[in-house]
Amino acid sequence: MAADQNVASTTTDNVPLPPNCEVLTTEWGSKVYLLGTNGFCQKCLQNVTEVIQRIRPSIVSIQSCPAHLDDIALKEEDALKKLQISSVFLKLKMFFMAFLGDGLVASMLYKQEILLSKKTGLASDADFRQALNERKKVPNCKLHLADLPEDALICRLWGYPSILEKWKYGRRLQQKLKQEPSNPANSHDLESSQEHRQQELETEFADLPAFKRVLISDRDRYLAYSLKKAAEPTETEKAPVVVGIVRNEHMDGIKSNWNKVDLDVDLLTNVEKKYVVYEALKYGAVMVVFTYFFTRRIRNRRTMDAYFNVQRKKD
Image: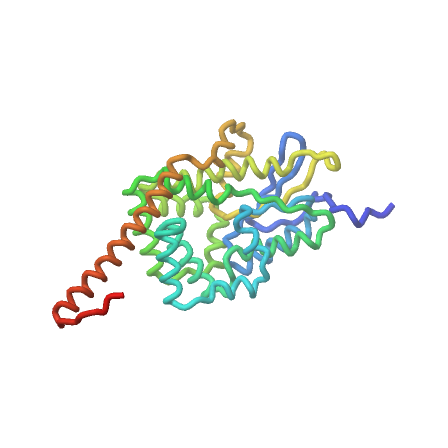
């Protein structure tokens, strides 16, 4: 009897896989095909296409959250247009991101995305965009978002690292921005090596334990938990097949957390009260700075008027 064409195939034995793809199995028999990517590499897009087409999973899980879904759902050319901005507008956006948005680190990471986009001709999260497109070609294949919510991640970024660590990480990102971006294809080939990945993480987060915990370790825990939850049995499938697409730096952490029972992982999604206090202080500080420069401008105008003996009409 021919297989039902309306159901995603889950026959995945002896399927050839890219070098940076691992197969993880749950206690109930579900398989998760974990594919590492770096987001700005044509080879990664090809790997995403090959894995989804060969595996034909019931679920495609990507390292993203609902806040970024609209951008990922864009066509590649539309996503590129959003990143094609002038240097003046880029500086303004970085300023507003630093003081009114997600902070200085987020603004520098945004600039890094712009530079990589210009070098590669791909918008950020091109691999996730490719996964969304390939998922639509597999009947009844569902989408799962595996990453921490954006507000929880930002809350942890502001709450855990000390001021000294933030300053060090900001300096490190600034130095990286001054360097010529490396070829993402070459970087991806290197990142396929576990030894290289570990060495890169040690170099990038040396003397930055809080940033490493928030950006890497805690996300590894949550991604492992989230991917495993995506592979839970349903009424229609006892052992769903999942393709999980994550950044290369999380591959090892997900594997090491896979068989652990993490009772506190749900706490990672909490937005703590001190983050709300920080928001109030941030906007208060911006208002103080704005008021200072505004009143200073008025004082300077009065000084100039007095110097030139200018009398202004009163209403």
